[in-house]
Amino acid sequence: MKKGILFILFCLALVIPSICNAQAVDKHITGDKGKSYYDDAKTKPKEIYNTNEVTVADPDDPAHPMIYLQKEGPYFYYYENGKLKISGWYTTNQKNGTWKYYDEKGTLTKTEKWVNDKLVQ
Image (cartoon, rainbow, N blue to C red):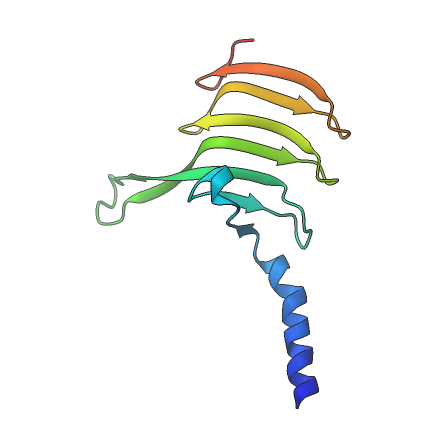
């Protein structure tokens, strides 16, 4: 009986990470709504960003408002090797501020300036 329970627990430990695609990350980095997105059962995060919930009235069905998630705050995107690929900032789902792009070795390759989702430099 103990072997059966241990086997089930082992199987669950293998399966659960691949089922859960989003997990909360360190609140000091991303705030209360931070999410870390993983590719299948890999252990390194692919993307980390905050979201804000926005509720909008549905004119066709006022009893059921629509809920949207907007990116808000710091944004990080990683290579498979765990090195940072892109870092930037979102304000109400729009790129703002300095965005930095890195190669797979971690060397800065490009810097862009964004204002309200428009590239300015």
